[in-house]
Length: 355
Length: 284
Image (cartoon, rainbow over all chains, first blue to last red):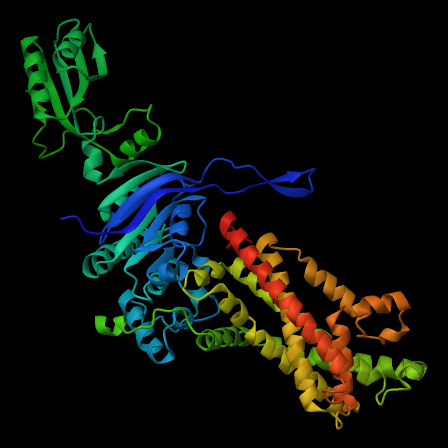
């Protein structure tokens, strides 16, 4: 069943005014340059964990800031929790923002004092502030460190406090802008679990996260969109991406004693394949084919009919990094995560040794 | 753990001015008092500054008699009001721009603007502690003058003094908001503070009476709020002038406030829109 969309974006575009220096002294705002966000349309369902992937400068943060009403779009429309972008206060009431920027706190105050200050800005009355702040500190595991000065916090603790601040108003939507920047592996694991289990699964908070870490997106996100130069190049689940033509799993086949012109025969029989290595003199070939069973059967039959000996067949999973790279730079072929010849992976049902 | 019911009962509107104002005062107080020497240095500085001007006044006192023949106070009293109120007006004026700049540099501006509290409430609340602090410092100036240097304010009309003080805050806050709008857009180099800071010191009657200036400069001083503030404050403090007696100055200050406040707010609104358009709210 399709859940209602809590974030609806339609044709959202942002051009930043370009400032140029005239005669080395005066500045003037000139005509538009390349858009930071270019005609983006997107819908994010309630309770979804959505990832925006892209390199630095892809437009991810600009998009999040437009949805948070901190940057005015040049054109297009968007709704957050049913409110159009012009309803700034209503949107701000219903969202929380976590950014990877450590600077957004008052460094000479304690963690608790920082949260109490921001609670007032969210309109939480004095009588309720203490219990709310206490609850949040407990939720993020900072109860004991709540009365320590913020500047003495580790990067992980600062990030946890940033998460607590974003939850002050119990928002149904969270924007996470590169929320794990600078975290060590242990803190990263804790924060990932907190986002996925506590916030997304248990509380049902819809999360829009920007990241350039593909492993993070794969671990946390139900759906992702890949942004490049302000545009969304592709969108869907990671499984969808892996199934997309050209990005699916593949088989790598190594055979010896094949006859000359084997490449032509494979081409005629299977259509598309990629030669990794071919030595006509010794009769050795290593090639890759798309990863469905029918293709594999045809290839094996062909090699055997050709009098060849199968040395190795291995299943090759295309890495998300390769898919990502291929989407952003379409001319490059996706690289594969293949172990070296002879380094057979134990338990791989597709691997055939000396078939 | 807090129950979901409790969460639903939370107020989700932006904080009221009282709530937000109190939060800012508490935050700024905690931040300022975390610098332990700052207040002590301000106190010692005030004492030394008053002593300096006391001895200068003692040195040149006789030669200034011609200018104070009509007044019931001497050059030192004249100077003390000038210095204390210049400090007060400069602080009032600079506090807005200074806070915006500080929040941009520390990255807290965007965090605050991500909450439902309006930017105007944030702007006005952010200077409350600074206004309170500089008022305390100004009172300290007068207390030091009374305790150590023979200043007398026995004839003061406190209603007039408070009224002028209020109008000082409104007129110079307007200029401060105007200055903040420049900082919001250009980050550094604010012409309002520079212009009013210099011109007020030279032409406003801070260190010497306006009447010693050439006539054409006296005309210019008529367009500077501090001229009226100092004149009315000296009359109220030392001559016990009633509101009626300082009515021309009060009306002038009221006019400054009525003209400058909307101008400041419009300018700030324009700057915020520009900064949101350029995506530079948090840049510095």
